[in-house]
Image (cartoon, rainbow, N blue to C red):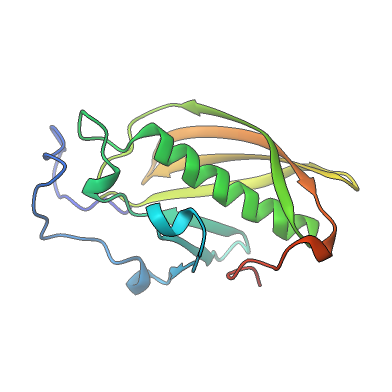
Length: 165
């Protein structure tokens, strides 16, 4: 469990509250994904391959990712999950894949300072489409469930993102 605070969490601190217990994903084996696009503005997104062989993606919400009640902004959770599932679809396709449809269900809050993790799986892959589903978790708590379809593009349409090995 990657909670940053000890004891029960009664409420979230204000988004700009100083922190003295920041989780370091790199110290736990996570690698940041370099991204020159949109994610560079809101990330970083982290990745690692787990003992079960599955690649997972992580995100450490900072105060700048807070909504008006001090939790992680829903659009940020959706952005993170779309990127992670998209990278997993790209890996499954063996080349570029872009989001055709994406569905997201909020289940619980994402807390500022708690490491969010996306686990995803390929439901089905055809010659042109990858069907994906995933869960975003905060430790053992589910924050969101998501699913979508990704269109497989010609391999010459884009360069492989860093972090896919």
